[in-house]
Length: 109
Image (cartoon, rainbow, N blue to C red):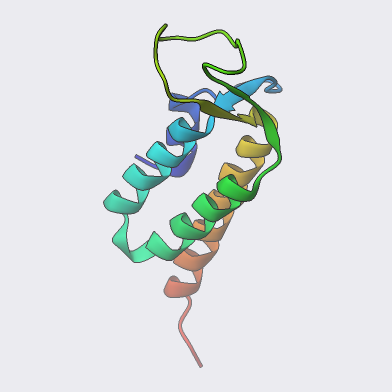
């Protein structure tokens, strides 16, 4: 799976503008899958994961926040990130991978 397909699969890239929030764990999970599938680019995926962790918080849902829970009774909290920021991150990641692959194809003088 390529980076943009992965981003589409979790709903952070669409045909129009994206808005709202996404669970940080979903983003990190798809980055882990991509890293496992592309060992030559693993450093770029690790860097992207670090950016996810440092990204601006869009809030949290959990037992102490009275947020809406997908799984009632779940004791863990969910860290949310802004979809638009995650979309930008995936776009940058796709560009970085493309640039790296392009530089591998260009013969050195």
